[in-house]
Amino acid sequence: MYHTDLDWRWVRLMGRFFLAVCYLPLAALAADPAGVILSLNGKVEIVHGADKRLAVNRAELFSGDSIETGEGQVQIRFVDGTLLTLYRDTRFAVDDYRYAKGKENRAQFSLLNGLMHTLTGQMDKQNYQLKTRLANLGVRGTEYSVKLGDVLHVSVDHGQVEVANAGGRALVSAGQSLTVFGPQVMPKPAIGGKLDIGPHGGPGRSPGPGQGMGPGGAPPPPPPVGTQNMSRSTNTPNGQVVRPPQPTPPQPIQPVQPAPGPVVPPKPL
Image (cartoon, rainbow, N blue to C red; front, top):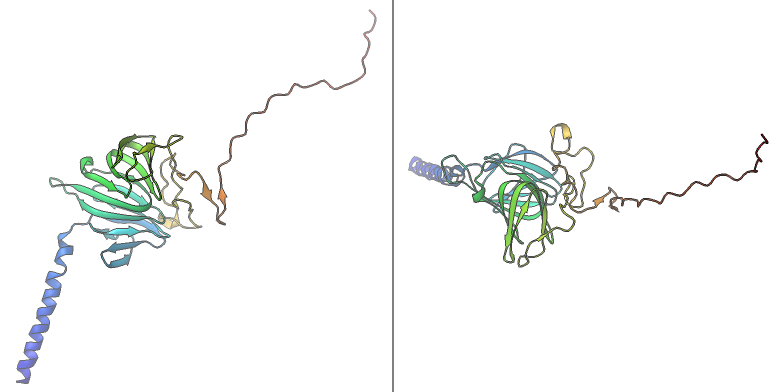
């Protein structure tokens, strides 16, 4: 009798273990990775539902994952070759990503806040979308940067980005920028031409000594030339805002007066 009860307990225990092993991981096994973390510095977290874990180099990302950088920065490569850099204080979500040759492709992302720079890969651009609370972005073979705070700034380095919301839509070409002030407000070209993106640390931030995402603590690759300072100002380590120096207006040229001296009469011939 004792052995019979023990055997049944063993069968029930093994049955529960079998269910846990076979059924729970099936959802994860059915999903293909969307991308992988190439490099990072500082604290970066990956959130999936109620689960939150620290990001590490070579960690895989899946549809449904969100990335929160906090004080860190991270660079991600997606399966189609898209490169994405997320700067400090940024929240970015991989809503739905699928890429395989000969199959349906889709890249749907969300930027919840912060600063990002991306170079799109081989994904069909008609199936690429970046969502924000102020407007949605579609691309046409593109390298661009986005800063989302109280307003949305879009700056394009190569290709074109279409920005659309309930107020209308606008096409931003290479070397141009655009600002969106609300979800019902028509996107407007940025005053003064192309806006700049903050260097490395994101809006109003700069990396500390030795921080970086490259090998040996080297700083992460900067955005392309002309996209270094969207805020048009930078913060020093002590928190003081330093404005870019204004050009000094040219001063009028003053005529040179001869020095006074005694008048020497001419010698007689």
